[in-house]
Image (tube, rainbow, N blue to C red; front, side, top):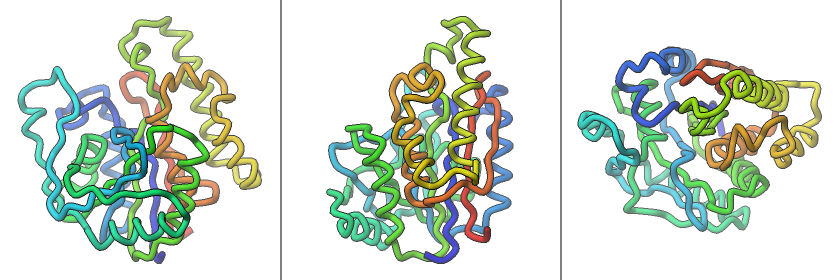
Length: 269
């Protein structure tokens, strides 16, 4: 692929970033700046933490619907629209790349865009004029399997593509709600985030070492505190599997009071 850019982003809480929420101000500013720095892509592939299936699935509709996969928010949160078209040709190319790697994959003509896609992309590309497809996680939540999915995508033949892993580097809902000791929580959050930064950014690591750290991520400091369930971390595994090297840029922002990381691999580095 020519001009491939990859970004793992922390996407915040539900639709809150779209409603000028103060606790998402840093995140919103960062995502807008990221879009201004990256070349405008011809298409976007999103791996969202909010879609899990038994096998990998790919959105294949020309006009995907909206999925409001959150609850308890104002009525306006259920009227958000992000009318970007689908990209069936890209979906077919992704399907072929995964099949060549012997990874079971299904084209899904019914599934729409979830908020892991349209919330960050509304901030990054508000004109909704770039075609998008979405790739599911596998509900085994196996780290090696998601690294393998990313590696398989190296076979993808598509120019000027942006791949976004839309998750969250910290995802403990009780901690977000302040139900745990704040000082202790902040320390655990920081230590895991520091480990993640080293794992993805340290160019002195061999790629075999980086791969091992990600496959054994549960051994990281306070890993299961920061991710009681790992679906918000695994889009990062897909991104690294595709990139196969240390990231070019790391950005840490505060989201809902927690340190949250994003990682970018640039095509021109």
